[in-house]
Image (cartoon, rainbow, N blue to C red):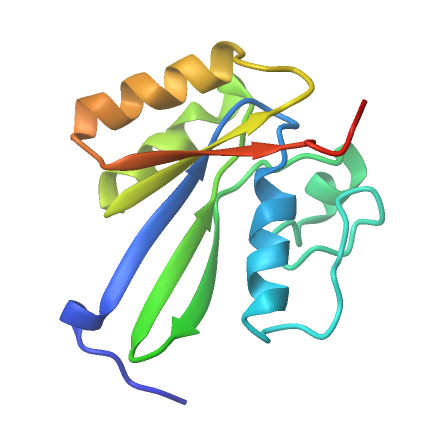
Length: 139
């Protein structure tokens, strides 16, 4: 197990509207980094970040999950947050410790209420952010 000093740890929060693909993006990142040998799906209830029985039953995140990904000599903690406003406390906690944000937007649904809230939260905490568009393969 690697030991990282605080200057070698980055926290990146995934934000966006419910169902836009945050958990699937986190799963893909973990798979590509070699943390898992398979890509889990929300529908199958076998992602590494949605481990709670209630999350699997409802097929959406209720809690923020941390996925530590080693990248070179740095550990990047991916913070997979819930997208539904009922769980905004979980999101606020994750954003408050983040170094940067990835705002996930469904290419099918476009900008939604959760997308706008995510942007405003990043402004509040002065977080650098980028947009990641999912569902680009859906007609």
